[in-house]
Length: 185
Image (cartoon, rainbow, N blue to C red; front, side, top):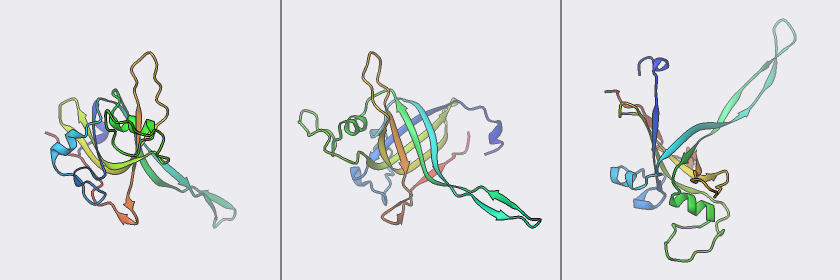
């Protein structure tokens, strides 16, 4: 990538989520078929905000000339992104209602039966520039949670989902986590 600081970019986000167990997906088995990804679309993405959580570890060390100085250390302990969409999708409904399994339309299900409201799976995020090519393609094994409160009022609901990167599952590293910056055409 030449001179990334000099690029003027308007990105559009396309996002897909494949839940653990669907089409054999697991932390050790990332989907490779394009159709699996497109079937898991998260709708019209309005915004994506990357974030991280840090742990500070400041300490003081002695100076050769006497006295002390503070050393600031900060370690990233978690990476996540918050995505806002224009549509209510099945993930949002399920997390909102606390359903333990995929919603079966026409079948009554017990609400609030899931105490830890998260869904694990593969997230694919494509950042597409105005010229129509992908600036980046990111695949994360992650947990998905509803971010904030979903408010129903006199305008379109724009729910937010938080996807937290999982680097390992049960002490085993997740191999398929990746970010690719395709060659620009």
